[in-house]
Image (cartoon, rainbow, N blue to C red; front, side, top):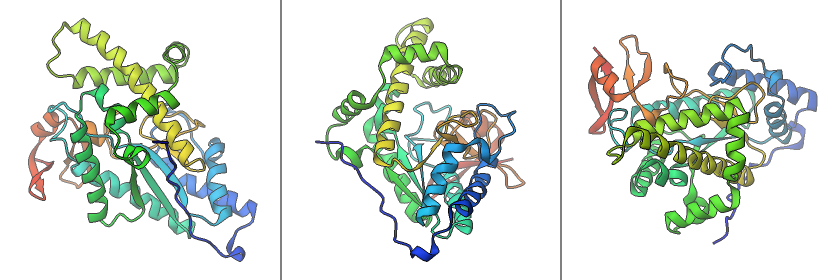
Length: 324
């Protein structure tokens, strides 16, 4: 089965409503200024300003000039961590609900500046590397399906979900992974060179290795053997993640590319924070949500949130914790 595109087709707009280039560029700076307070930065001390993101400005300007909704793509929301010390279960919970509402609200804010609005495509990547992180494919399907239901239930009309099923249909999951890897993944040799030479790639590699060590249950060997195995799998996860990013870019070449990983100023992808957390690498799928008495939300490991709060239910199942 070919890797067929699934394009998003914008609604037409009247020619007399199309702004001049200079006006569109100024509006693009205002749109990017809405994103900057939520930036997940690899260089948090940097004084980031819209003009330091020329690629994103050009992409947003093109949508504005065309009179189209601004399309944002976000690889992420793959599945829950398999480590019960981190999460409440294998289905989306309050952390995902709050994050989705935040993303939809961000699109709504953009719509206040640019009348055609903005749309965000959540490119759920769980099946891309599920075998490497130890999560069963049926759990990934259940997570992705519940995520789509949550979007519909909450009325988050500016969001939609895209995953391997949209590209390769009902092929076996291992076949899908193999096809995507073969067509898009960088070679292991090239990736090893980048880990040595590029600090951002090295940080990503170390971060993923740490997650894999934390999330691996019942490993039969020694701690050092586990470390070696996780380092090997980390390379595979990065290869597959890059392959997924290339596939998304091929299907949606004009989109503004967001990332849940920290990104430096001016990078091709714009790092975005979803909810407050002490660790810049924390996501809703590696944690659970704690609500403080002042209404503030924070992402924490399950074991940490349980020490600080009491469990709360939503729709009859565990959802988050409320601080004591």
